[in-house]
Image 1 (tube, rainbow, N blue to C red):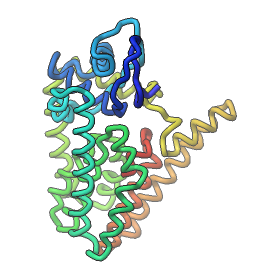
Image 2 (cartoon, one colour; image 1 turned 30 degrees about the vertical axis):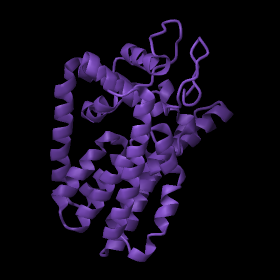
Image 3 (cartoon, helix red, strand yellow; image 1 turned 90 degrees about the horizontal axis):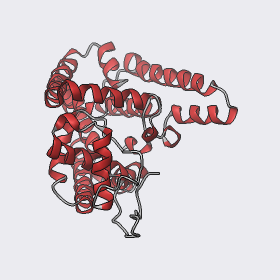
Length: 311
């Protein structure tokens, strides 16, 4: 029940295609505009906003599980602008923005980091499955890619506090930080950690001021809900060890999959940290390889990781 393609009302009317993840983002922006930031995690209001998105009105007799946005409230700000447009138009504008931002940033990053004669690989990146999925679902992962790219560039330019600010922006999806932060700590890279701490204080402090105590309680409920397989988390469709463990549990009718997930995730994280501790590169290219390994391992080991996050 992802509500992504041809959505019909009870009157049989065909609606526009809208990526289901974007429904959560548009709905949060709409709620912030109408009822304030403290309500953006309220599931009842989310359901009403998404009814409006799909059917043009609230239909209390038509139920589907609302699709929440469980991000820090500061990341709702751009979606308040998108919520000023009709949902379908807003989704197409968001998709166009992500496509252009992704392509232009890849070109920019390649010119700064790679060899100019390797630009042909950009084409293969743009048609990759994670890139396509990010656009298809209306996801935010293109911007995670940009944050990470700027972290890499700042580290290679020895602007380590700035690099820390960029890595703190990954709080957009905090599960992306489970390896990179311990790696920086273990290798005693203090300046990036200072930058990351300052960035986190700004992002989290601003977010909590926006939503207040009521919003913090609602956000906590959502986070714990995702940890306990809330219906919208979809572990069966992820691209990590948890997905495999979920199917092991299903087919064996045991909890052996949980043990597999725990062991495989721990081994993957330790392998990535080993690279930072004992293969610390002296060349920029070596650093890029370790970053690739770090975030490949992150995608495998972190609790919530769909394939589109691999972008």
